[in-house]
Length: 325
Picture (spheres, rainbow, N blue to C red):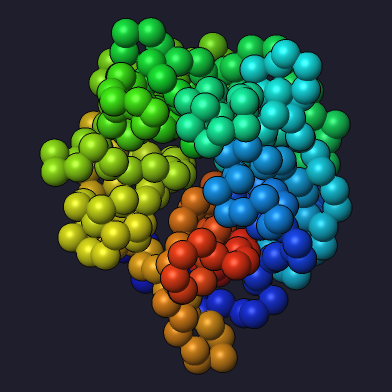
């Protein structure tokens, strides 16, 4: 697939941001009400950009048009509190419509306020609702916990789930295992599958997409099934797979969700936005790719964006890139 050829110029109304908040991780779905629901992560600017791991929560915005403008509605899934596994943070939302219900996969964590402590307590959860606005039913255990003794024994996060042609549900996720603390081992992606969207998910034996030159390989995947194969958009940390600049997005394909190869020209998405007014903006971050699928066809690509500049970004936004379909 030549994914880059599907990208169209972006209208300025396709940007969603919030004063006093960093926004990230936009995942959209069209509800039975005909509206487009954007589930996204946010955390206070006052806490700094790195506070996604200590202060994030999942909120919702709504639009009558897939490209926006989106209007903020409220928080739909915050930290559960108490002694829950997702006590402090919810992040990485990705929403799946299946069987007339909605499934919100996310990363949850708890910790002592220190970055790496929260990061290493990340686990993958799922919440279920009859409407994208909720209420979302969450569970007292992760849907994909760590696996002691395996490559993902330290943490799991970055879930993305699709339904395959056989009715099974395939999850691609990020995991980290043993290694020098506090970072732990290699940052890799793995695959798990389940008979139902609520799991239980069974891991495939080995991680996918290793970078032999650097342990930080890939993250922020989005998986979907189209025509006769699985596709995966994913951030290429070092530019190893795309042979392009660091942090661009690669596209892989697979017949079985276990063995993956590059698909079409690379990179699939570069770190630049082509606006409808003719301007081309190069950005520091254009990541967390999430497709809006309508009747199984991608109609828009949502990405989290931080503009070009030195140090931590002063603001961030989610942007909807229209796709030719």
